[in-house]
Amino acid sequence: MKKWPQEGYKWYHDACDMFDYPGLPYGKLIKALIANTDTVLDLGCGIGTASVMLSPWCGRVVALDQDENALRYLGDHVRERSIANIDILNAYWPVQTPIQADVIIALHVYGAMRSFDNLMLVFESAAKGGFIACNAPSSRQDESFVELKEALGIPPNYEKCDNGCYIMGVMEALGAHTTCERVTYEFGQPLETLDEAARFICWQIQGEEAMLPVIRKHVERYASKDGGKHVIPITRHSCGITFLK
Ligand SMILES: C[S@@+](CC[C@H](N)C(=O)[O-])C[C@H]1O[C@@H](n2cnc3c(N)ncnc32)[C@H](O)[C@@H]1O
Image 1 (cartoon, rainbow, N blue to C red):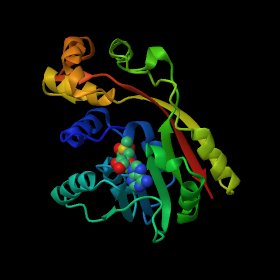
Image 2 (tube, helix red, strand yellow):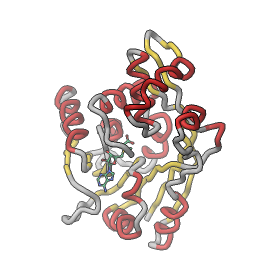
Image 3 (spheres, helix red, strand yellow):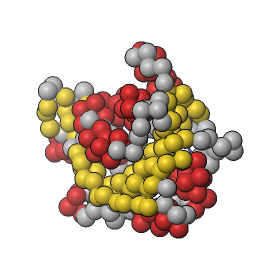
Image 4 (spheres, rainbow, N blue to C red):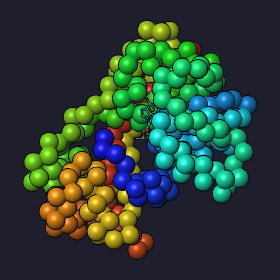
């Protein structure tokens, strides 16, 4: 994935607010794992929308990410809302110093969940179990911006799969009971202007700045007006994997 643009964190925050992410797609599955005294590790928390969702459900949240800028965004949010039970940890998984948690969640932490050793450390660090969400493959008709990508010579990635079956297989090999639920949900992007919408699309398709004039020509085809915002619809297809020890 291309580096997040400066406004990327705010865009993401606005999208989470509008589409109730991660509560709507994953909240029920995650809440079922948690008791109110638990410590929950939000691995790859990004700006921490899941950490904030988890905080009233458990005793303590450890919000871990490698991205300092995302954690700074979360830190501001936590202070503004006076949330006392989120500890923010700037670290890279696999961590050198073990973290013990009751439950570990890792939502769309892409590459980090593709290695056996990283998954084994998740298994070993979670006393009860956890929940891992990753991209599932879809089809051409479901891929956002597919015509634009084709026009720009950018290869489609609807067949991209983050290998949820491998994650399940590893957890089972280690002795966990696993279940997987395919979850499809709307996770579009509200934006202030059409120009901002074009920049957002450019980032999403991993385009170059030089492609912006072409993207601007297509942007109205993708953006629809909703409550004064330009909203770019995006449908996400995911595997939601629960593992229990
Ligand atoms: C797509 S974002 C998802 C953020 C959040 N889990 C959510 O669903 O909103 C992926 C996050 O995982 C973090 N990440 C990826 N690999 C990591 C690793 N090995 N260690 C720590 N953080 C990682 C990235 O920095 C990024 O913030």
